[in-house]
Length: 164
Image (cartoon, rainbow, N blue to C red):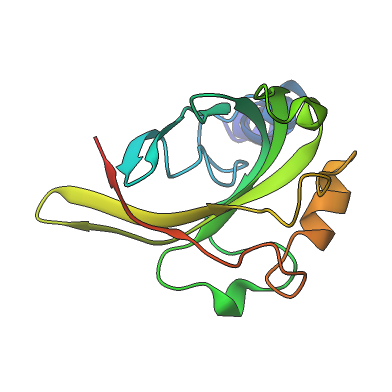
């Protein structure tokens, strides 16, 4: 029986840790970080609404793929500036608005802060980075390092957006 257990333990370790690492399977939840972006849903504010799925943000007149996100801080080493529950997403525009077709396939940052739920109502403040009509980037890493408060991209946030 001892010999059998000695042979069984390495096989179990192989199945539990090595196979999932190479196949992307994470049935124990040990390998993954954030499973999904925490702001999934439709958010209504004074300017209209945005809809966030696990992979896309629909702004109404334009859409962007979420290529990367972080549910626990801001890009550009500015997490200390974030208020409350905050995060960011790196966006790649998949549909451009008619007034700014040049953003198609370009990158930008969306930030949120003060994500809270009180008495069943979830609210947040959010901002899509903006400096001027030409302030979009060819790579995600360029957007992550440049689109910051210090760079002037987040001069205002939409406040009190309410989740449907």
